[in-house]
Amino acid sequence: MRAVRILIALLGILAAVFGQPWLTFAIMLVLCVLFRSWEAVLLGAIVDFMWLPPGHFPWFIISAVIFLWALEPLRREFLAR
Amino acid sequence: MRSDFTYRPRHRDGSLRSAAFVTLAIGLILFVDIASGGSVRGIVRDFGSRIWGAGHSVGNLLFRNGYFTSRNVLESQINAQAVQIAQYQERAAAYDALRSQYDALAKIAHLASTTVGVTAPIVSSLASSPYGTFSIGAGSENGMHAGDLVLSDTGFVLGRITDVGAYTSLVNELFAPNVSTEALVKSASVIAVGSGGGNARMRVPRGIVVDQNDTVTASQFGGRPIGVVGHVEASAASAYSDVIITLPVNLNVVRFVYIVSGQ
Image 1 (cartoon, one colour):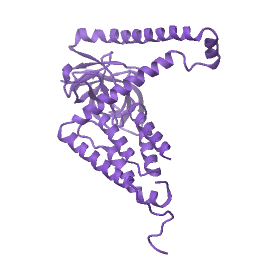
Image 2 (tube, rainbow over the protein chains, first blue to last red; image 1 turned 90 degrees about the vertical axis):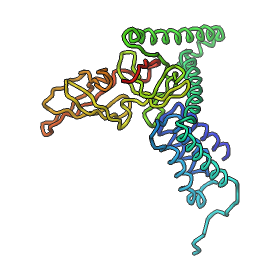
Image 3 (tube, chains in turn red, purple; image 1 turned 180 degrees about the vertical axis):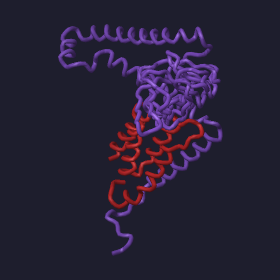
Image 4 (spheres, rainbow over the protein chains, first blue to last red; image 1 turned 90 degrees about the horizontal axis):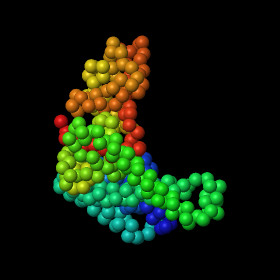
């Protein structure tokens, strides 16, 4: 599972630089559903620091933090750690 | 049933601590970035541009080499001294890359004769930003300022510089989603609302006849063109016509832009 987690996170970094934004968003969500993944917050930060114009709301960082912490009860009960 | 029932045994591990630490660290970095006027963003953007540049070069080399052409072609290449052919192809790809770069610069050269500005390469993907932005390879060291206009080789306004780093700048696309611009079409002043992908929408009073391919300009950009009318939807029941403006520039193949001082 660790290898899968690393692979998805690397895919997310590539998506943040080369891919469509929805792909990065989906990867963040998948990471947070499957794992207690700090990498998702890092991905959100990469997207926002790369693309966010001044004065705009950092949607990707906030979304990643919400995914990471709001999905904790679900992960704890049913899914892999 | 107990309210704290769980299907999984509870484990104590460091992942909760890691997640909390990274969340706090990113929050702190975000705060520092905002407080310092975008210093962290500049560093990440420079780094991202380098990764994009490297990936772009590798992609170009692979695809122009014919590496992903049909199996038969590849087999015939292997049979006929594959190594030597690959070397020739690599040289040809390098020539093609230089040739297309030269063509792009030659097209943009006429702008330099009429307007004082700086030519800069695009150093990021044009499709990856969720905020309708892209990066160019010129920054404060090259005389860029926030608010400068970014033009295509044909003189259409693509956007404005919103954030300037030392060697890269962030450009906000004019037709980024939900960005409003005061536009002028057939002497009527209307608000164009960007919808991404080089398209925008606007509502024109039905009394004003707007045709396909009419040029749309913006007085706030010195009367420069910002697009052309791509489609007009007029309904007898409505007092307005819905007009779609498109940028007559394929953003996916634009490699250089021309930066002029914001007006």
